[in-house]
Length: 448
Image (cartoon, rainbow, N blue to C red; front, side, top):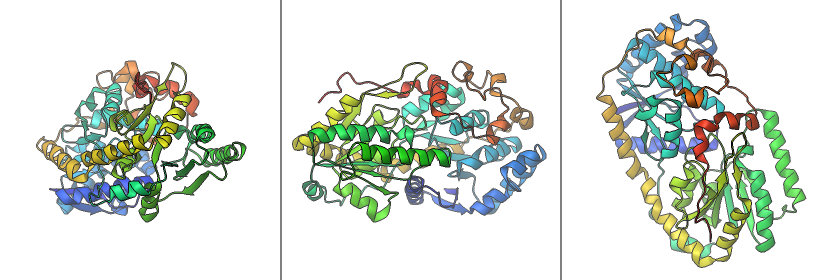
């Protein structure tokens, strides 16, 4: 099976890691056909803004160019690893009834930019497409947006698991004192709370160390800088300068060294855009137990009391998610102090990694894609009129009881694409709660 893909290099380290694993896995079970970013954007005939200014004539142009590209490359399925282009290509496909399907991932659901995208995509999604969600929790969120997402299939993200890894030797070299947090660094990832909890951990385990690796990200440069300064201030105020390090984005050998030397992975995110938690799977591959929030798909990856712990998370109406901080401290301290428990969890985590190996995951993805290819193209008679409609006007497409409170629910679908939205997090969380409120969870048995 020949599957087209966009051959650019993602800007963020975490995106490059996931995309790299995907393409390696895909190449083992299908024939990836590269499409350069320049060729992809040339289909639009300019910027997305230019394309919208020429609408609806630009829709015919894009459909013609997309059809020609697929004929030239001899592909009828495209892995859309550049999500910004997906709405335009999918709309053009449906407008012209082209025999092409799209394979794409639900990398995110509840952030404002992504929720705009999911609102747009719902009426254009067909049985010819293969939409993958990493967890059932994320799939449930999509279903609160539209019944169209019943077509989504739950298949986890995969990674290359090194079965030759000398786990016993690595486990024996670990000190039992090193915590690792790795991924994007921003307020919704709760690194500020982690620092405060780590200070409490140090009161009981004075020689504990914490590494926070990753790239500072955010919706605007000033917010990124403000959060960086907030964390620097916390480290100084809490007296953690000699116990916490921020090495920045890491990959390759540097990343391997961090996982090799660490004892426990900590992920306390309550990011509304969270779907999977790829670093939790990476931790399994290195035999690291995890302490993470009982949030979204995390509870589907971490088996509480087996290969890690889930920290209770509550979300009251009109509020923001809250983490049980005392419980988190207790669970982390318990793992650092109890080498027998920690090593047993590490072994079970290492064994559980096999389920996420690309050799297990990608045959399922290729099979799902092959099944989608059997369906005929389904043209939409008046795509231009549909694109000018607002979700609030389409009760047969959207579950309005969950989305009508969104401030852009009355905007046209095209407008959803032209604006990303910058609602402050404290204001955004109550708006998105009807869709992702089930992300927060508690475990009655969450005790050491």
